[in-house]
Length: 99
Image (tube, rainbow, N blue to C red; front, side, top):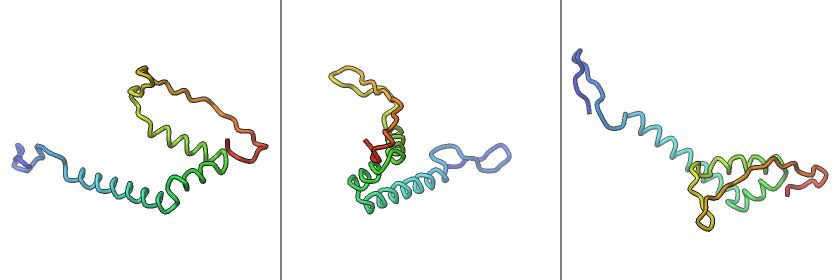
């Protein structure tokens, strides 16, 4: 919707700006593309096989996973707030495999 500003030109007065819809379409397209690639790479089994190949891919997996966790502390266990501790893990480099 547009109204006239003081100089007689149109000004934006409500709703989403036209560019907002384009950004949402791009985000949906990217999310769909990632989902398609995920499925083509084997879904959960493919992700597990990739993440468990070595400590570097396991670190990448957990880094990305931690970004998907809820930010608010609304997670509970037995009705009590659930605290998730992150510790620095150093793999046994002699074993040749991820834990």
